[in-house]
Amino acid sequence: MEKYDRIGKGYDSTRSADPHILGRMADLMGSVKKARYLDVGCGTGNYTAGLQAKGYPMTGLDPSAEMIASARKKFPKIEWQLGKAENPGMPQESIQGVFAILTLHHWPDLKSAFRALDTILATGGRMLIFTSDPQQMAGYWLNHYFPDMMQSSIEQMPSLAKIKRGLTSTSLILQNTEDYTIRPDLRDFFLYCGKHRPERYLDPRIRNGISSFADLAHESEVAQGLTRLEKDIRSGQIDHIMQTYANGDGDYRFIVLEKPSSP
Image 1 (cartoon, rainbow, N blue to C red):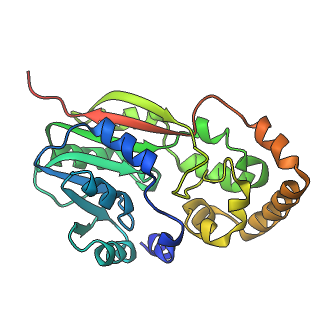
Image 2: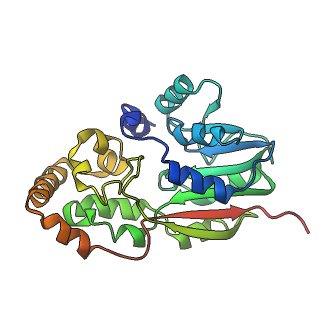
């Protein structure tokens, strides 16, 4: 868990629950039931706490001791557990809903994780995923400045087709998908947070909170890419680069899964 612990240091200086994303997650999950809800891959618990504030009785699960310790310190009234999606360590059908927010690309075995989460999810429950798709990521203008890093990021990101294949040994069904496009007022500085504000990537604190920069990037490429980016921002050339990568496929995606009730 070393890489998660490394990212966890200083994570909260640039990462917070974005109100718009939080609202859409609550809308897509649906009305609150009395049973527990799980935020798998919860990090330092920002979205977990935001969902709890909306009435969901939350438990946060993460493989990083560093992040769980931070979550417990910030939000002591919420239940936090150290663990992985592949082995959440919870009773069968004990969870009414599962949130998986920007975490699927960290799961080494999708099929195993989906089977485990299917086991603990109650009949009639939902699983809500917020992720990106390789096709969407190919449209990020970051590819112009950090091509190797982005290629590594794209390769580890499961496509919708791969997610569907991961569901084949479960009772979970794909109910709905909804594309999400980065808004200028985004408050959570994840990978494409600088879509409209490229100067954000010049801040090392923001890069350190993004797993692609913190774990997948080579220092030489980042240094060269930042030099080019800063030059293009000053000259205005960045506007042309951004327009070149404009696309209508969305930047991220909400995926709603359901565990159907027995007929």
